[in-house]
Image 1 (cartoon, one colour):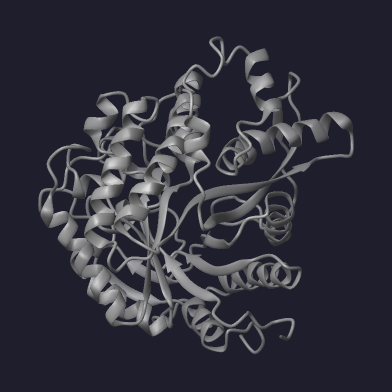
Image 2 (cartoon, rainbow, N blue to C red):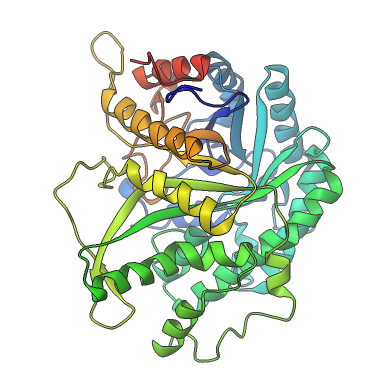
Amino acid sequence: MSHTTFPAGFVWGAATAAYQIEGAVCEDGRGESIWDRFSHTSGKTKGGATGDVACDHYHRWRDDFALLADLGAGAYRFSVAWPRVLPDGRGQVNQAGLDFYSRQVDALLERGITPYVTLYHWDLPVALEDAGGWPSRATAEAFAVYAGVVAQALGDRVKHWITINEPWCVSMLSYQIGEHAPGRQDWAAALAASHHTLLAHGLAVPEIRRFSPGAQVGITLNFTAAVPASVSYADRDAARAFDGYFNRWFLDPICGRGYPSDMVATAVEAGLLPDGLRFVQPGDMQIIAAPTDFLGANYYTREVVTVGTRPGEWQPVRLDTPRTAMDWEIYPEGLYHLLLRLHSAYNLPKIYITENGVSYLDEPGDDGRVRDGSRIDYLRAHLDACQRAIAAGVPLAGYFQWSLLDNFEWAHGYDQRFGCVYVDYATQQRTPKDSFFWYRDVIARNDLAGSS
């Protein structure tokens, strides 16, 4: 194997999420999600944008699958919308919703594309949020039932499952920071939500295995590399705290290590856990640590941090380095070190990069071509990091570029473009960007060499 070639059988794919592309939010019995409510609340999204139409993928998915086939993708990671299957989050199943995803699975398999199904990518049914949301244990229990419903319907054909996408975003970004739906700002609720999100994962694993024999099951975590601004003890301690909050709080429990003791102590000291981990019931940590077949890792950037105003706190340091349209620093070396760390410190059986990509605002030129060379440079640098990690012994089995299509980018609305396919939202016309053809070449060669 040369220094640019990927192993035989390496999985090449692209990824999307239901609320970001589907639209059709009121069609065929779909219930309301927290993102429907959030995006329709004044001031919550850029320009008041919603996912009501998004990329109209619900009606145009066949055309989008033709793009996937043209890309040469061997796999497609997409999410099932919980409120499309169970409009109230529990109870009556909406058969039309299940049929929609069943048709998609069949079409992917007919094209030789392996479906990687994510069960939860942030579109919680409103009825469950109104009953307490993720801070409530009942939501985790409802998720396990939902997982069983979907696995029973699709598990004869789908053999790769991701339970939850990015528990940090589900809990901290949504219930502590309030940037994402449902937009609450409550530390205690966020900590309970973090536990119940992980519990939902653990409860869902055996349900998926029950209805999808022989399936590969995992979870996707988002990672941000934590780098101290200096070699001082205070800055190194700030980086430790950031890593604990963002990475280890979710990674350690699913790997059977429980919640990081240093972070529990910090939370208690800061008064964030006046009643301790009272939301943890006997047996929960064993459930969360249910054996899985792989870890999905999402990586975009790093955070350089310095000491905050109190011990265990941090504040970001902005460096004069290249950044994306999202104002995220470009740091591919962080992906390399993350993969080495996951392998050496956690001994995971298999890892997929389930999201990696970049937002740039390239528009079609007069000739209709979208010249997004900066995206190509980003992808090349990060794929080089992946290849070096593989050469160092990391069991990296695949890479999913985020995203196939420009789409609704959550609180940023339509202000950001991550796709390797440009979407004109007024006409819904799709235009493959230069990065699409570059990535297609990499996939065809299974090699970074010669890609231009």
